[in-house]
Length: 61
Image (cartoon, rainbow, N blue to C red; front, side):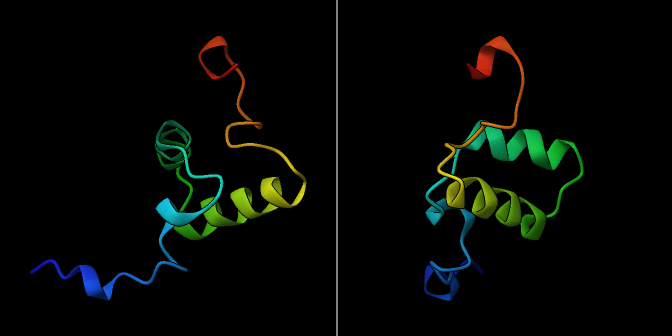
């Protein structure tokens, strides 16, 4: 059964400053794990880049 008290905000990707649903879906579809996605977002955030900075295409401009 779902228990919201079990979610640790520090480990929840939705609490990441670079959280973006389209970016998350794109990366998951490419085969990245949650840990790898967090590492990408951590790298981008440390560089001052917003979410989706590493994506190409007009829908992400």
